[in-house]
Amino acid sequence: RQVGNKTECALLGFSLDLRRDYQAIRNEIPEEKLFKVYTFNSVRKSMSTVLKNSDGSYRMFSKGASEILLKKCCKIMTARGEAKFFKPKDRDELVKKVIEPMASEGLRTICLAYRDFPTTEGEPDWDNEAEILAGLTCIAVVGIEDP
Image (cartoon, rainbow, N blue to C red; front, top):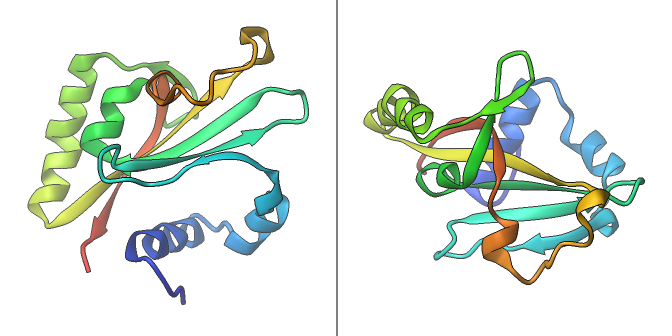
């Protein structure tokens, strides 16, 4: 049983449903390994955490309101775990077939996404949030019951 923010608790429960132990993940990636955190704010309606990989590249994980974060995604993960291009018409279809039905059931939808920053692109300008929080790959959209 989790205690705290209802959205965070729901996502922790989701990780357990996926048979992933949250504590094992935290042990693998302790807070000290977090390179940068873009905390949640009401304008952005998302939060992102950047990890530095052993090869010097970075990976950023983001979560937030699906209607906002999906617009920043240019790829989406397939069921086979491959990233494919995500066009505006694909986004419209996802909204119609997934997000709207969840919303009609009273669920709040959260988009989970990531972005890689390869070493070949040089050091990103971490202060340029508009640039950093773009070009995402959608991992999933989840529906959460509002408390």
